[in-house]
Image (tube, rainbow, N blue to C red; front, side, top):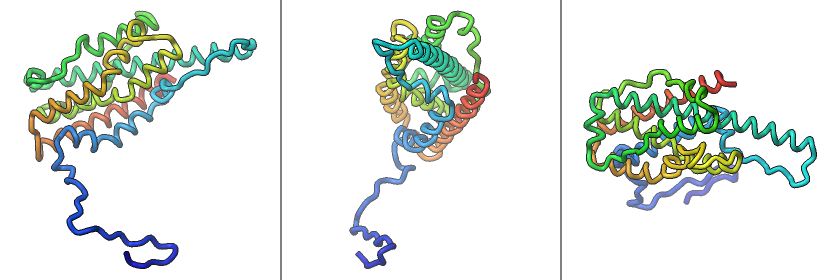
Length: 249
């Protein structure tokens, strides 16, 4: 280690043969998708206020609450109910839009038919509509809208990258499910079926998707194409969430 002044960091010395790990382009595609979209995923999760507030747990009302505390608690509950409504509407739009883009792709049938693809039953959109109806009534469910057009999916790598985003976006669902049940009493049986089924199983489902992705053996330019498709999809989601947040304030 070479000497240095008090305000200068020591120079780093590496032992001969020390390996820092493989270059990202040499990793399996599922691992590349996880690493190369992580920063984008974290940004997207924080761009809309409802996506942050839906994780918040309300303080319980004290046993000997004053009238003012009761009014404040009622207001907080009403505000949280509206936050959860926005979360459901935005998530429905996202799921429906991505599923439609995947279905419109010329490779959709072949991709889903491949051995090991983790099918969802019932579909996420069915559960989300049921939650909107259970919590807010049929008129709200009918107002659920589609996202603006996502990137066109022409190839299997693009299909893989886009589907990775759809499933990867559920990673924070267990925390949201716990907050929703704590605040509103909604469970997987009523009002939170999407979070309680697909959401709580998100990690296992994403692991199965990763295994399925790596079965295809996509490497080189094909792997780059999948990663780029995932990033473009996340960008589209970010634009949509900002728009939706502004429209529903």
